[in-house]
Length: 241
Image (cartoon, rainbow, N blue to C red):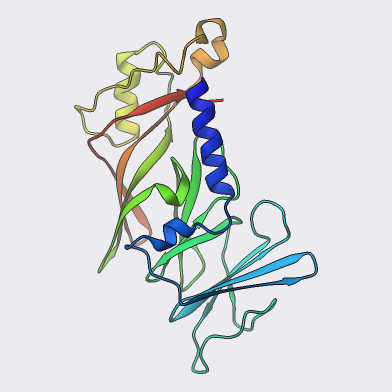
């Protein structure tokens, strides 16, 4: 279980970062024009400017943002970073942190980790609606390939996935169910979970609960619908807490 705890601890540290600087510097993400941050009492207002829009975050020192909004460029240009901005569009159903942008696709990290991994979301920059979200090894930082197509976006990342059964006993039928649920290739090899399940014989709650795996995946997002394709590579597993 030591490996699992180390992985989770690292993921929580990464997820807690309000601005994922490394992600923004990657070549496949757009580079911001500027970042502005200022205080209003106990609140921190952060504005990240791009050519055609700005993302505004308001935090109160707790986990996540209490407000996330998108402001599109008007004929007068982009406004100054203020607490309230006319015509700003709230990001719906997400309370984490802004991480990066690619065109009109905005990437947000979650406000905290969970036993599976670290969630991230892709938001429509025009509407503020969440188009897609998933658990990844370390959230947005797990994305290592990103391409925009005429009809959508394609990304590759290290996905964290809760299996529908326990991989403890290396049950063949369980692994077949996992491959199907995770959209893996038929010849994907089952990981050896012996190390992370060490000692589980004495704790049936751990032994029998669903496992968690992480693996390489490609997701094609078109018209709000996601198509998953498992990619070749190492599959790792751990027992869910």
